Length: 94
Image 1: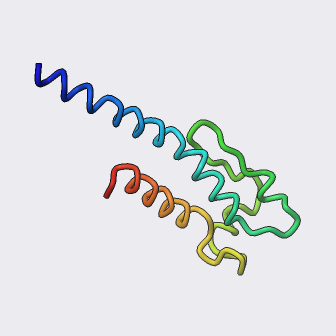
Image 2: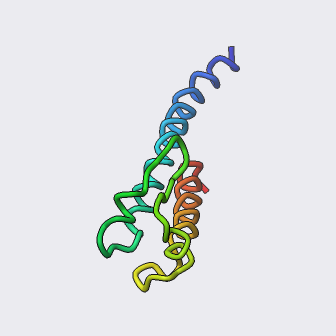
């Protein structure tokens, strides 16, 4: 009996955590695009989300990610990874 009561309290919390975790890739993608330097807009337009993978599909993506632009001196990947870590810590309450 006690186990069933505990399970009934845990399930809704797990559902909320799962829902929040499913949103992490799209939130990370939006963040990545937001911090992508903009000149002509090509880099932002050519960045896509495929499943859980952010794809920067343009020839100079590596240069931008290595800090070539003054608009994003740290690139986009490392700040996005840090953003994801903060999101996940927030989801799990740490």
